[in-house]
Image 1: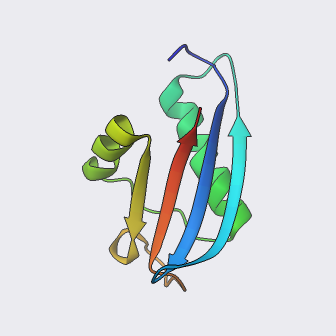
Image 2: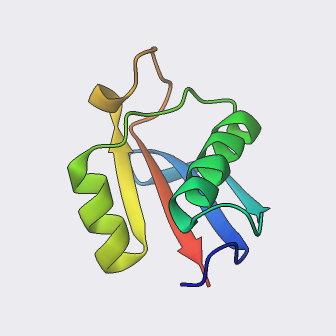
Length: 92
């Protein structure tokens, strides 16, 4: 992935098998690395979905690198949440 290329993320909130909300965001900055752009996208996605920013764990890095998506669960949020899981997916 080239530095500064636009990244588009899709976020979905689930309770059980029911999708509660979905949102897409896109961000680019030619001066930032892929990791920093991904971080900005995640923050913007959380803001738009009105959810707290989750803790990004090593498992998230592995999942995202391998599958271009990852899941966040209750234990990764420092505030109470009204959903079971938060999925983000990189849309290429």
